[in-house]
Length: 248
Image (cartoon, rainbow, N blue to C red; front, top):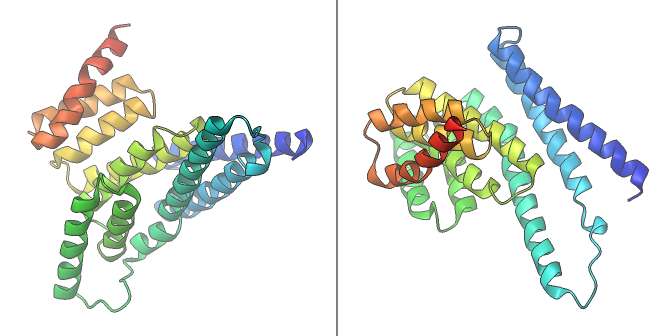
């Protein structure tokens, strides 16, 4: 890839990331309605992911035969980047469309059928959470295609995405932060007393967004709502870091 083409792609990336942030601002002040916001955001996220994928194209990586450790590290990083792009684009576009329309999965019936299906999917997702995060994310997304207001699926899909994103580059982290924050904020809107969503939003804001103030607010709400022990362990591990950042 020529330097000129690379520079053009970098400009596109910056423009698209700024556009996503501007959409959030316009929605917040009421200049954009929810339908337009979701439509435009899905388009921008997909385009940004494609640009990042082109920037990080394997053709740009040149590794000597004598440096196999570096080659393996680059390959692992590339696989992670590709995985994150696929997940973020899916959350931002196809799964979002299904969520907004209340689309059912093929072969599913209403009421009892949906309840049975989501219960089964959630059970499988819980068992898979930290064994195979991508598989768990897929399962939570299937739940949301059937039940778009499922707070647990919204919360844990966002959390797993954030965990995966911690090892990625800055651009992918930004996309993951936007997607994870969107799901967690939606979960809180649906059920303000679900502690897990507050806990994870606090961690995401600090780890991916660098927002210690916003993180402390959510972590305080989390602590006041008596979160499960396994979730509290994540929070306890980060509260001191957040407080230290606020005291600087």
